[in-house]
Length: 310
Image (cartoon, rainbow, N blue to C red; front, top):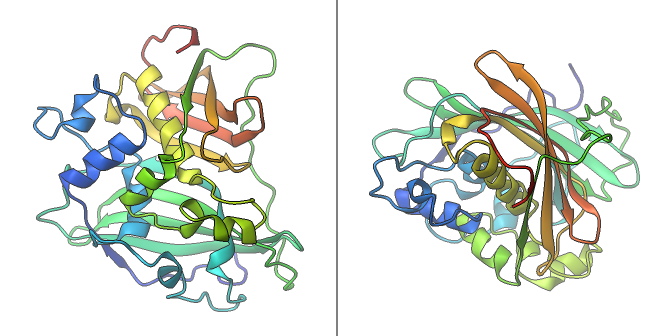
């Protein structure tokens, strides 16, 4: 596929993490005391939660707070407008796991290598930038994870670019109840904890950016909801074994505000690929309100799970 910006490669970005980073991430997305392999560094099966690499494009190598806006402004994609990073929200994320993530990056040099897959003009609502980001061992070239991201730049369209291809959708079944339901009550502190992983977008801490963008104030990271749902799927269907999650994706359909209750409904499709990977579909709603994560799909090695509410 060709088009404005397609194939443009960002400069490689060195990334690193410690066991403490892994512990913080697991705590912030809802891991529980019966999952000590995510929460206790001396557990013999200690592991990094498999969606952790999603945070590394924000974190880089630092252990300190990052100026989110300055980091977003560092590189301009040639051939497309210079979009305003203070008015960007997540569109969709797909993560693919190829190799287990080491407990720490120590002793190796890891990089995030990102290229543009497409830049699309959606008219008055805004523009979409699709990218592919690989977590790579710089010395061997091995790819550990791949993240396909869509970022939506609010009210930054009408520049004459292509509209983009039709989306591929994975709707949940309409003819039966979900196999598993799990929920979580967020608090005013939920996003304030999650942001310490390295995603310091002010939209999730201070009301001013959210008011400017029409959200009325602070909203919770879309990636918090995304990672929280991934944890629930793995715990309830995959035995909390990080090796049991191969692919995971969801679309960010509407914002979540601090204090909202999240409810995830999950359907096992029974469709299995080579290796025993079962396709699972899901959606996340704000209790009593809108769907906030749609197009949910994962490939999981599923364990027996009871039906009903968990």
